Image 1: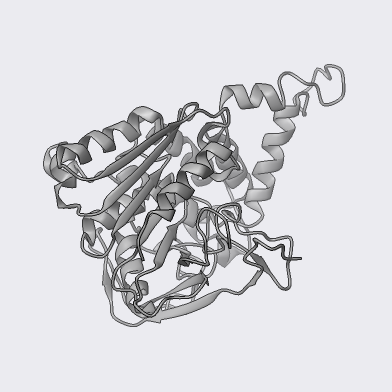
Image 2 (image 1 turned 180 degrees about the horizontal axis):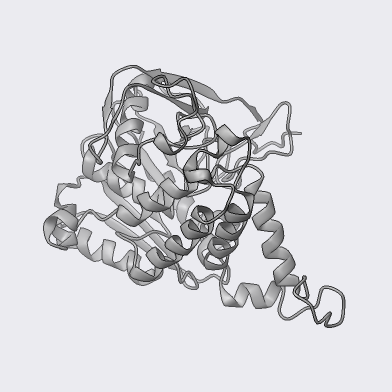
Length: 375
């Protein structure tokens, strides 16, 4: 079940925080729980901890397998393990399900202590800044004063960047992969279409679908289909599916004709079977709102002047959702502040999802950078 370079069997842990957390929206979380996993051992100096931040549909389950579900492999298992780029023989790796998530951390599916019912739509909207504030409390809980590195791809990369701004003295290296300093208008538009698919589902019930014993499956399915298209490149879709027909001929109907249609429906149905609609709405809004330069009249260099970390920034050539140009914006702003930056623009045919996949060049770059982090 576990190979030599696998994390092996893992188990989630839970931390409860009782002090209220003031959110960017002005709302307050009276107390909350975060579910997390750890891999490797924290050294005596507590200097080898690495926080892995997840993207939109990710979770705390970064690596390894569960004893009762060996097929449930961590979403970045190819990166984390003994001898892998994020080597647990050197690092103590932490993965956390963000506040508002649907994998066990306090979120819309949790019981609201004020009502005794699930939060549903009453769960406050949380932002990237709020996630990082909550992760700061988890670091305190684990006895980690300073992270050796905070790493993430996509929305996870935004969190790594925010760590360097909100807690500049608590992160030595920020690794921002396939990410952006803010969403483009096009990205916000895609998120809005996905949200409208959920909001217009008759089973949504204004966010209180749990009270009705239903799930807005159709909306979630459509939202995932829209999102998934943006994670792939045209080249990858052409290579994997092209114009292949499902049944070898045109059916002249609105059922599945092409293999790409079948694939998108499969991905949509799979996602709708486990992800929470309110969490999806909230997470896409957090993506939309993230913009460190907002309070600096759009000047990203001024916004990043607070950072003290060294940076690894990486982008992928066919990622049109978070294009290399967006990563270069981050790099230029960091260089303006005379911060140490390593930047890699990686050739890949896989689009935005490249950061999740096996790629020898990409993993070699990560390995080289991580090997040079002193602990």
